[in-house]
Amino acid sequence: MKARVTTHEQPDAYTSPWPLRHRLALLLWGFVWAVFCRWTPKPCNGWRLLILRLFGAKLHGRPFVHGRARIHIPWHLTLRDRACLGDGAQAYSLAPIDLGEEVTIAQEAFLCTGTHDFSQAHLPLQTAPIVVERGVFVGARAFVLPGVTLGAGAVVGACAVVTRSVAPGTIVAGNPARVIGHRPTPPL
Image (tube, rainbow, N blue to C red):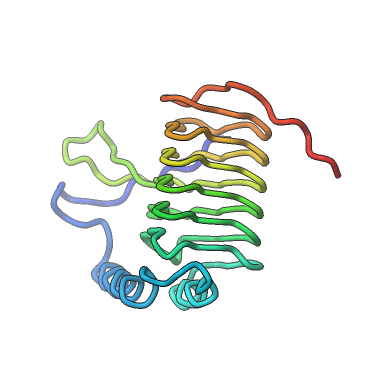
């Protein structure tokens, strides 16, 4: 199933697709994260989760978000129990990003929900959600494109560029990411 791509209304390349209220909320979010969270050590995870909740992130159980993780729009982020956004990981959440239980997004990995419509001269913004199902591991500096679903138990190798959805239990690596193996079925 292909993810639904949304093309945002933009009269030209210099006009933001976001209303003023949304842009002001993003300014406030960036300030609050920088002042109250970015410098905090790992044991302050509960504090960071509280701030994320206050800005509309949907949190289930006890996920972990590193202080140096970057979340563009927190109200588009869902984190389930034991999901982890590592040091320098980026959730560029212009559209929803859903991280399932026990997901690990390693250092400096980039989950990108935005692109542009290159068929139009003014390149309007296009967005599509990213879904990362239970038990997925995304390696350091991997890049996941808009509209991708990473199936349960999949592994994305370090520095891989994921352009298409990945089947459950599949190991992918490279640019563009290609299947290099399969994980054994975990015991019940």
